[in-house]
Image (cartoon, rainbow, N blue to C red; front, side, top):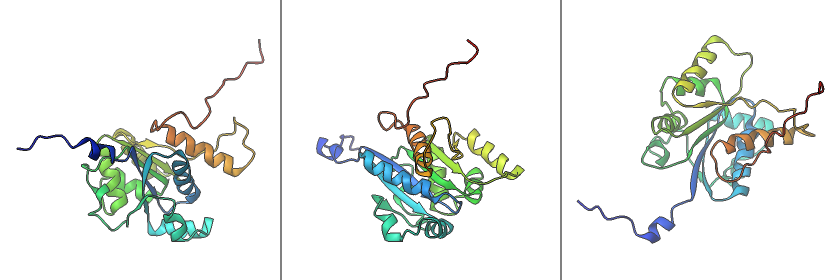
Length: 207
């Protein structure tokens, strides 16, 4: 048996970090797109992009982006039908996966381990390898099936992260609200110095 370690030159060629970003058919395609933009500016992270058919509908409707314009934001683009892709195997090391936005269909597929397309399979791999999975679920109001599926994913180690706007930092635009959420999500992966500012606290008025 050959137990030799890889040559140092081969190790040096490996990407510093890898993240999977999936965009599915819920409103809020801007979160996935801005995620790719922020990762590109951050550097040192190889991004793997997946977009469902319904995700494309929302991208075109909400952002008027073409496939070429979106694909240019990622390092690697996979078809959701390509179940033989690298990210379908746990032997392909990644730091985790973000689904932004995450539809209730995708949530259900992950919660029940269906692996019926590459998005659900990559999420299943992320969970089984004990890597970080973050789902930016987008629906309101929730029904009981949604809540139970979110509980199931949480019990498996996933992170349910509804992209709720934060008003405590007094955002001046929608872009600022989106960027704050994206930064908070990326900070969960500890890619470097914190991207979102720490909460400074408030002084009470009853002192």
